[in-house]
Length: 337
Ligand code: AQP
Image 1 (cartoon, rainbow, N blue to C red):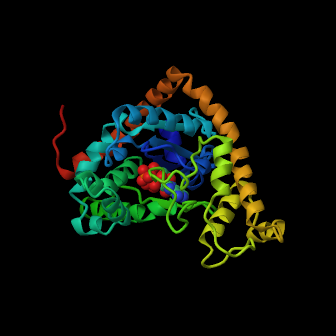
Image 2: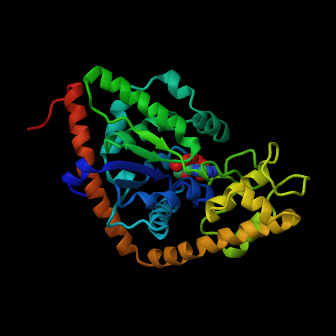
């Protein structure tokens, strides 16, 4: 990406934490949708490892998952020549801008973040400051690249709103510094629910083995998990209030097939839940099979992945440094000569 392209095209930024095996929720809410932007936007997609350590991670596992997450980006169709793919900790400007923005983010607004409240309950013995300021680091990720659009699942929208508030506050004090980003939510798949507790979001860190379907689960596991998905005592496949499990399965089926609710209701009329669950499992397994094959190929070629990381970090660092220098000048830091 050169300076001219940066000026003409709008910019997209998004990322996923290497905090576990990526789920079908991560796939449908984020990475599956990223490819459509690669011709028309400057796209930066980051493996956000700094975010991941807000929850304790085993170092060797985190390292492996960082490679795996990058490999999954590429295996899901992202072309490293057309997208800037990189690892967050390879670009120090993320942590640097995050510190500055911490001084423009309010304790009260951070306390209201749903994810902080949820994760404080889930990790009650480790409510660290990083968990609290997580959204400020996310604001830095986005604002560093003068991002226009942030494709994310619904769970991250509150953080995008906060990013806008922080950017506005900074711009009001120092004049126009940051572009105002917008969130972009996919039509189908913005919030995939747990298969075991369908009133809860599907998460990669869920400890219930039946709750989340992982992108890299085997075909048999995918089908087994969908067959066991919690539904309700009705038998008719239709979207309705109180049918969280079926609604979720319909959303997943739509996201993979493009079929509308009416199409799905007609297709499974008179067939009952068993047929439907099996069909969803098969559709998901079929769609993920080519991703698995490409993932295996990429993971066997670490040198290639390291090359992608290195090139991506160099491109991202160049762009990030421009914004960071501007911010440092505006707040009154001296610049080394
Ligand atoms: N269930 C979901 N449905 C749709 N989108 C989802 N995303 C996450 N879960 C769902 C989207 O995936 C992207 C990356 O998420 P993340 O790794 O930054 O963190 P997260 O939102 O906290 O995801 P998890 O899976 O719940 O991770 P853990 O368990 O580690 O906290 C984001 O665009 C997110 O919206």
